[in-house]
Length: 164
Image (cartoon, rainbow, N blue to C red; front, side, top):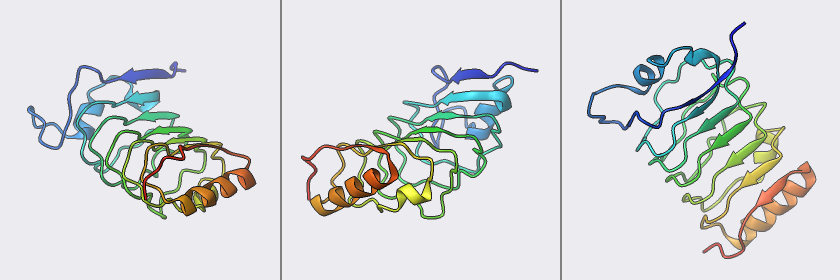
């Protein structure tokens, strides 16, 4: 049995118009044994969109921090994903259709969220940590999220200086 590995793409820049013209899938498929990766680091790559994604049956952590993401597409091929790092992007919503049943930690700080549905803890039933610091959330939404986190037994990372 192959040992699960951590893959970091620190030397492969990627964006929609990458210099080499490679797609996300071409870049990732060029890595030996990418399908058995336990963690994939795509931080600081200038990624502006997540195209159709290939199957990552063992992936537990996906790092997409410090990119230019504005939307999230279907991530259903991440069956075992437990930690998703999306901080420092341009996200403003979590699609209600997004289902990551094993997700335990979701990092959304420093994005453009004005509202986060408190049902996020029902959408991701195993969610134990939600980081929404430095988003322009309303005080009402902050209270809703605090109550929902408490009811779910989850930790909510939030700052009270959110702008209305």
